[in-house]
Length: 311
Ligand code: C5P
Image (cartoon, rainbow, N blue to C red; front, side, top):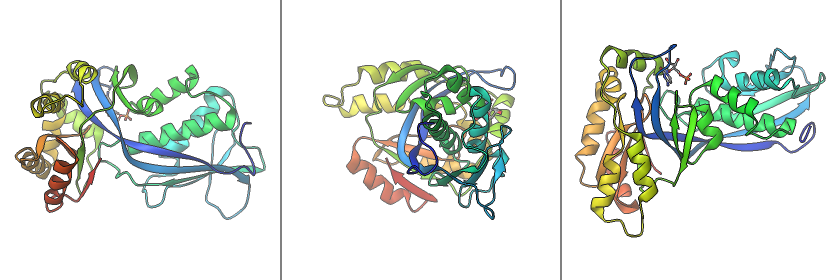
């Protein structure tokens, strides 16, 4: 083991994402939709600390199929440990690599400080899972680009593979195949939060009843490659922003009419180039020309959003 009992905790940042473009195809195959998406990693992040400790009584813990005792603390997150993607990442890693991450007298202690709202289309659970996989790799002395780890990431959830990569990326397949790493999105975003989350499977089901036409993630990817932030005019920025789209949006609007109102209000704001829902919602985001515009818009958006954040 590269890091183990008595070592300093391994700490990881587990960033949120937005889908700058989400182009979902119809019909689904085997319960999943093929899609093209430009993912963008945000500075908003959960924090994860992982360490191996001597087994002690009194701490709530679950045991993986390989026999490792895992004590997982995700604060107020209301998910049973065995259903938590972080636990599934540990169990899956041990199975896929034939490894034990802690000895019989030890426990794996995992603490996650949740900063990313759940059910918001920001990928918090998937990002935590990817960070846990990084921690497992560090503990077992395996590289995260090991094919077994990459396969496991895809099996844990469609977004987990992106979080192992990070940055800005064009993803295809179920959203789990890295097509191309891209330059960072050059315009500031303002996240707009909802007080309630939306269920991803329910939004996909609603999409299937009335599939909306998809935009082109490939076009956005190509525009990002050619974009020169130093020379870009407002018109260039507007063109780039308007290539961002999400065809799950009508289904999210149907499930949550207040979300439509919020996004339409943002779109009508003079400081906003474009606004859209991320993933299956319920978080949305506005794209602004520069940081001053983003800050001005955020001031106004605070009055009609549950929370806001300039990224
Ligand atoms: O992979 P993940 O667990 O994040 O997906 C949650 C649900 O979202 C899936 O069970 C499926 O209903 C839907 N989904 C889909 N097509 C995708 C990704 C997710 O239909 N490409």
